[in-house]
Every structure is written in structure tokens, then in C-alpha cells.
Image (cartoon, rainbow, N blue to C red; front, top):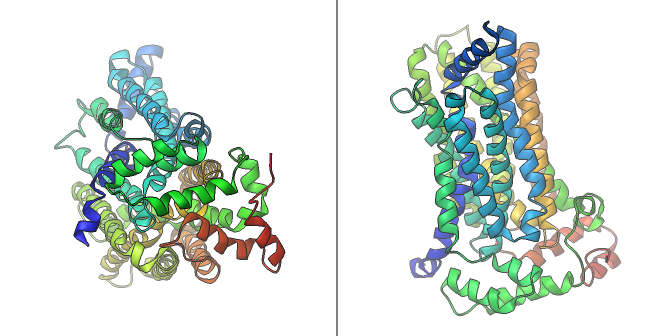
Length: 492
């Protein structure tokens, strides 16, 4: 088994390179902004004083800070929208090379923002970081999924979640006051994402383009054969080439599908539902709410304020450990069971957490139970929804549909993140701990949807997965199922 896996060492190296400049950037941008919050708001006030001769009002400063946080999601949405056109027109590799240039420009804006006395440069830098994250995350998963053999596709695409968790932990660690979370170092802390972008830009030059893109989109069998042999280190690639040929034959003469095609075509209806509800909608499972509530629960348990940041690192490390553990099970247990039962366990545990938060003052040990429940939910999230939501979309769509499907996935994910970020505070004010019931409902619904309806995709080729979903897309219409084996959709 070890010898079999060793032949893919270059593919594993590619997953490392893609992760460092792809989903790692998402994780670090989510976590790194928390530490310098006080210093950035002080800088905004200082800049305002220099320009207008008076300190900025609290409401204006809060609004500017909120927009600095939220503009990342807007930039990520813009990047996700372009993930449907750039990798199709220029290829997966060139799209990522361009994406790294965007991150390097953003890092330079952060470094020189204090010298230029411009908080607008921080806003623009955060927007560009968001663009880098939105485009990079989609193309990272697309590129890696198209380079992987079917028996490793789940494990390798799941590394996207591992790098997100790793990025969160790294951002939390370098943000402590003993490292870069100081008034002198905060511009360099914000610019740290430029380093992985530069690393990926240089390393990616030595790797080939995605084989499926070369074969199906560019019609280059010889280039595909060379890319597969280089990545897989084996001569027996006949079955993979045959699978690509089947997929190419079925889409012969068709252009890459648009977002409208994905939204309106019957032949991908259930794939779209699977992409939208349990995968792209993962922001609605309550994980960010748990991170928000964690500090309040830590206070109630008597954790000193100066130690909470270190405990939050423990939360991030728990998520990273759970996602890494998920990678060992996903190609054995399957996507459906891991994600479906993961959502179910999250929903049940958050229901218990809602009850214990309501009676937290009755017994002295309940706050500690709440801490344990938070860690349990985060562990379940990492073992199921977090990892599988990265891996499953790579299985769902054939080549012509995949880029536009990732546009839809990114749009749902980033707009959901923006809405949760903007509205969650008001929801908490209105519902208190009962806000978790919203996330319980979403988790239970997603679990039922996955367990009852969605076919398993592990160990199957793209064409086999499509045929399984056709049984749902054309239920009680057997003739149409047969027709799609010849023609997957309307010709252009």
C-alpha cells in the first residue's frame, strides 16, 4: 500500500503547493484580523485627526472597522465570479499565477498603509485579499480534483479544508502579542499573506496544467499523457484516459456551460441542490456563531481575559485535527455518511448547548460543560461538513459544468458569510442563546437531505456519478435517462 501511494509523491507535492497559496489564504485571513483590531482602529482615529483636526466619532470608527471586516467577503465573491471564466480561458495554472500577483499587491498595500497614513489602503488590500481567496479557493479545488485519480480524489480535495484549518491556527499564533500582534508590527502582520502567494507563484511554474483541462477542454492528448505520467509516476494511465475520452465524447461540440445553464438545466438539478444546500451553505451550520459565543462562555467559566486568546488557538487546533482525521476516513467511509451524520450530530449537540446556555447560572459546573460542548461541535464540524464540503463539489459535475458550478458555490458561500457577519450580532441581541436553534434547523435539514436522497460518490468516475444522479434528475422518466447518455444537455 505504501509503494502504491509513494508513486503519487509529486501529486502530494502539488496539493501542498496549491494549499499554501489557496485555501490556506482563506484560513489566515479569517483569523489574523482579530489581533490587530485595536491597533487598526487607533490608526484610523490617528489618520482622521491628521486630516480633519478632530478625532473620529465612535460610530464612524465602528462603521469603518465593520467594513474592513466585511469587505473580504465582497472581494471573495468577485473572485468566485471570475473563477468561472479565468480558468476556462487561460487554464487552471495561469489563473492561479495571476491570483498570486493580486495577493502580493494586497500585501504591499498593507505594508505601506501606515507610511502613507491611509486606512483606505487597508480597505483596498482586504478587498484584494478577498478576491485572492475567492478565486484561489475555487481554482485550487478544481485544479486538484482534475489531477487526482478517483481513489485519491476525496482525500486530496479534502486537503483544502486542512489548509483552511492550518491557516486559522497560524493566524491565531502569529497574532499573539509575543509575536506580531503589536502596535509596531501590525502592518507586517496584515501583509503576511504575500509570502505564501510568492511561494506558490514560484513553485507552480514547475508543475503541469490540469490533465482533464488539457484533454477535454484543449484537446491535447499528448500533453495530458505527459502531465499524468509526471504527476502519477506510472505508465498505466489507460483507464484514466478512457474515462476522459468518454466525458469528452459526451460534451463534444458543446461550449463550457454558463451559470444560467447550471441553474436551469434538468440534468444537473440534484447536483446543484447538493452543491447549494449542504456544501456551499455550510456557513449556516453555526460554526462562526460558536467562535463568536466561545469568548462569552470562557468568561462565564472564569477563564482570565489574557488567556482567552490562547484557548481560542486550542479551538482552531481542534478543528485542524478533526479535518485531518477526516482525510483518513473520507475514501473509506464515504462523503455521504461523514457529512450527513456530521450534520446530524452537530444539530443534536447544539440543541443540548442551547439548553445548557439557558440554565448556565443554576450550577457552577455548567459553564465548563458549555466549553466541552463547543469543542465537541467543532470536532464534529471538522470530521464531517468542513472537510466534505470541500471534497464533494469536485465529484458532482462534469468538465463543461464544473467552472460555472464553482461560481455558484462561491457566490452562495461568500454572500452567506457576509450576511452572517453583518446580521448575526442583531440576531444574538434578539434571540440570545436561542439563535442556535436556527443553525440546528439547518443542520438537521442538511443531514436528512444527504442521508435520504444523495448517492455516494466515493471510488466512482465522473461519468458513473453523473449516471447515479440522473436517476434522481429524471426520476420516473427512464427514456430521458437513456437520452442523456448520448447528450447531456442542449447543444449550442
